[in-house]
Length: 325
Image (cartoon, rainbow, N blue to C red; front, top):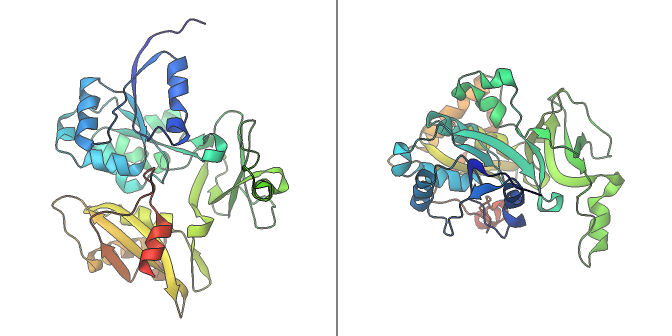
């Protein structure tokens, strides 16, 4: 088979040990695309490589993108042809909006190690692409449409499908030819993974009428407060839209009266300041707009220099909960 040389440049910004950079190097090699590997994940180095090689496509977790966007050198880069696939953690509206101001076209990818790994990706229709980049954010942050040969659905705790109306929520389940069937020396976990003939992801989502998936949270990260379920991802997304906020993580902490209450960790952009009251006041506009309930506003917010991450750059909510005990 003869490979055609493409002028497009690809730069992976995902640790190679994690499902081999999401499997993208295989596709890039098959297409004959030039690939640029940074070696070290240093923000300034990544921006220098971006400029030097005129990179047109990258993929990374939100943490890496936030680090790159915090550099001075990125402000002088031509980013009008830079497309970035965000995965590992949710792409927030705040990060997507900040990228759009620099001309960066961000997309969402979704999957797991067990799904090798991609299940869905952002899909923008031609009419969506005609909108100003800043107005495309609402589409770009959605989890997207199932990739070819993958089938996605959402089910209730009994395993019954729920309505694809954009409101009903359930666990994301998947079927595809390449999914993990079991776990080494743990057959019982494999049976649990494939209960009902579908791979259970452990993610809570809604499905829109056009089958666009919108992840709401991990089942284990949903905050149960006062008999209601609160999405930590939704709250992080809203906090991220504050102009001073660089990143946010929200977890549920035990509360004698309400069962759990949301507790937020917030990092600020360089040179920016904000207080507990500032963030709470910012969130009140979403209460007035009917997007969240008043009780969803965190009473406790810690402003930190860095939010704990896993080895692959995901927010480590288990560690955060352990630290807050």
